[in-house]
Length: 87
Image (cartoon, rainbow, N blue to C red; front, side):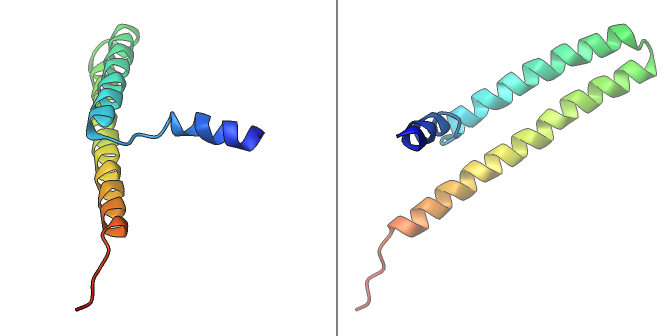
């Protein structure tokens, strides 16, 4: 009983479509920009700029990985559902 409910709860956190992926990437970008502005306040000069670039750069890397995984999962699902017929 508990395992079934836990499985249902776990399905809420799975990114299934590209739209969901874009929303997650947008949220990551907002958080990275906010953190970057705090770094600019705390570390004025080149240090703050480098930390700001590191924050935004990590969003690009994470976004690319998320989109690749969504595409890979879709291709995997499509190949397993197509039956092959031997004539």
